[in-house]
Image (tube, rainbow, N blue to C red; front, side, top):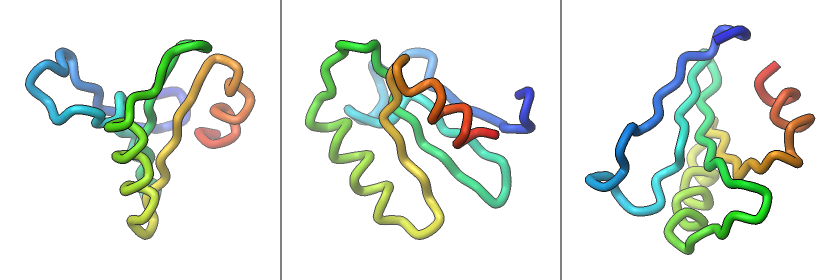
Length: 78
């Protein structure tokens, strides 16, 4: 919010498609999808496939972020 991003995250993913990213971030003209994991959190195949497919869409950015990526996250959302 601080940098003008609007966001969506699913409260309860039990009824959502498996692997859909945790966050959808919007600040026109940018659209970012982000999967958030703990430092050692396992990435499921469904999550990898969603991110790979989203990266194939022109203008869409898709990331897998962990706490160690903090500096990169700040750069992307600045």
